Length: 117
Image (cartoon, rainbow, N blue to C red; front, top):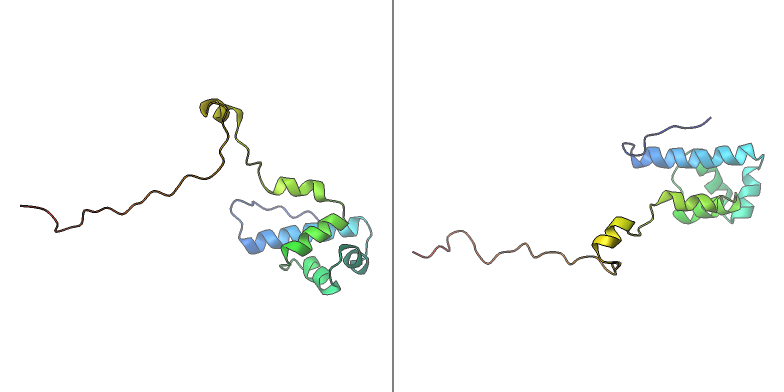
């Protein structure tokens, strides 16, 4: 059963539930027991039970299970590529950003009641 979810509006609990259950569905489709996958991934059996129940597991455990299921190629899809798009390179004259812009100081020396008359 595929769990469809709108990630842009879903709560973090719903997203965790969906991702964990999808991993468990993949495990079942490959006819791998929880014990065997736990051993292959280097996680506890209770972690696999939490995953099957759609409960939160650590990011480390999530990645280990994905690795054991040979799904690491799909990890890149979780986050967009931060590189600058070609049009932005042209606008920046070929230079790539090396660091984030400094935060602007929003404090002002002027305060109410300081008017000079």
